[in-house]
Each structure stands twice: as C-alpha cells, then as structure tokens.
Length: 321
Ligand code: SER
Image 1 (tube, protein in one colour):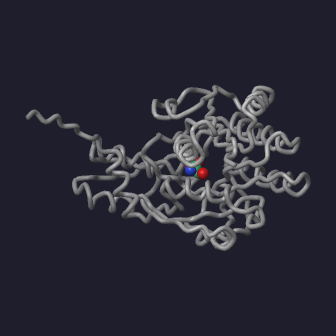
Image 2: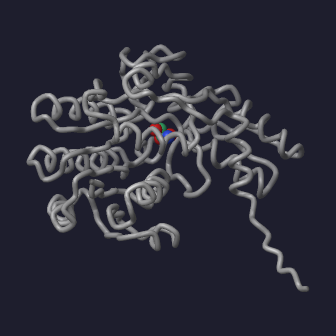
Image 3: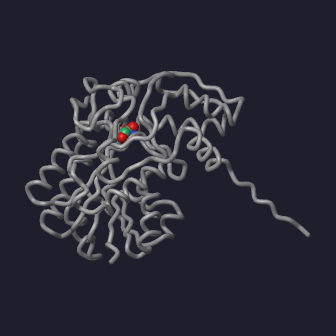
C-alpha cells in the first residue's frame, strides 16, 4: 500500500521537485505538500497543500493526525550563507523542526522520516579529497553545526527509540525549476541564469574553489531510493555521504562557454569563500553504493546541457495555414 506522505518545505528548491516526483510515484492525494507560504502554480495545482510552520509543534501534529501521515520529508531549513547572517534563527529553525518530527516518530504518530544533511557537516580539519563517510568533523558554520548535531540526534533516536529516520549528506544541488535561497553552492545555479540573461557572471567564490555538486534529478532519485530501501539495508542512521561530481567555478564556466562562447566570468569572493573553503572538494560515497545501490547519473556535460535547455525561454510559434 502507498504511504501517506507529508513534505515540509515543499515550495523550496528540493521540496518542489520531490513533491511532484512522489505524487507521480504514489498518487497526488497520497502526498500532502506544506510550507510557510504557497508555491508556484505547478506545485499548487498538483495536489493537496497546507500552510504550515513546522516549528509550531501542535500545528504540525494537527496536520499529521488529520491526514493520517506515515512518512515525513523534512525539507525546510535555513542554508549556509543565510544562517551566517542569522545564527540563532538558523539554529532554531533547523533544530526545532527536526525535534518536532523525531518526537512524533518516537510517539509512533509517524512511521518514517527523511531528513537531509549536507557536506556542511565537514569542516576545515576534515580531509578535503574523497572525504570518507567517517572522518574528523569540526563544522565551522552555523548551518554545518546544525546538520552535524541533527545527525547525532537522528542516530540517537534510532538507537534509543527505534525511529526509522533516513538521511543523506547532499552536495551542492544544481537545478533550474525552483530557485534556491541562501546557499554557498548556489553560484552553480546563478551562473546559468546570468549567462543566459547577461552573458556574464561575477562569481562570489574564487575560480579554483572545488566543491561536490550534483544534478537535482540525481538527488531526488537518491532520496526516494533511500526511503524505499528495505530497512535492513539502512546501516547508517546518522547520514550517508552522497557524491556525483567535483566542480570549480572555472570548470563550470568552461562547460558553459562550449554552449555560449561569448560568456564571460570574473571573480569577487565574499564571505561565502570562507564557508566554501571549510568544505570538502570531493566525497567518497561507497557506503551508499554498497548498502542501497546508489549510483549517480549526470556528469558535468549533461548537467550543463540540461540547465541551458531548461532555462532557455521556449518560443511558441503559431502557424497560420
Ligand atoms: N547547498 C548548501 C549550501 O550551500 C549545502 O548543503 O548551503
């Protein structure tokens, strides 16, 4: 039987695509989208929607009980760059929503949780290349501290209360359907918008700053795959490393130039450079491969093509015969 699903943060960069994918897989009425504000037309027209502030414990519980929810995907969070500006707000949003959902599972009001972690759990003392699943983790950003702490709590709730919480450490995610907000890896999206609009981009990171990145379709596939995997395959209850490509602004700009030869990039690093410098350049995701058969599909060339195609306005021609 199809699970009844609640998506928190359904209007965000990941949530919006995840909602549509899960509705396709399980049926539109099985998936309740929720956010603190309404989303775009496609999302709003695709199935049930609730305005919900997931830091509000009783409002969240009301929605869970009203729809008889089995699974929660908690996609609401304040990302790295914004959380540096509003540390307490970032911490509270990221942690309170997680505790609310973990406690609902502990009290057996829901059966399964997906909670995203991030490469931000790593810090300046972590080995940068092929960062292993288990290694030194001393995150130096508010966002990273909240994700690292969240991972510890997920594992704790699993061990102590048997909560079925599953998690992935997403790399930077590249997508065109919904704009991201407040991430350090988001230059890799802005660059496409600016390349198509103005043929030039001023990057807030230095040209050789390497970060792990992934196309959104791969991230959605991984999310649905880990949630559908048989329970005995999920051996890590903090969060799984997940990897696709390692990218620098320079490499990405060269890939874009192959499609748009007149494109130009220059560099004006800001406070986000320090955040990027504290994160890995590439990730070793062998446990995800071994435990639940993870494999990414999209490489840099394919991502570039998809982004340019997706962001190029479609001209509709009316033929008169
Ligand atoms: N993409 C996120 C950020 O840049 C990292 O998980 O904040």
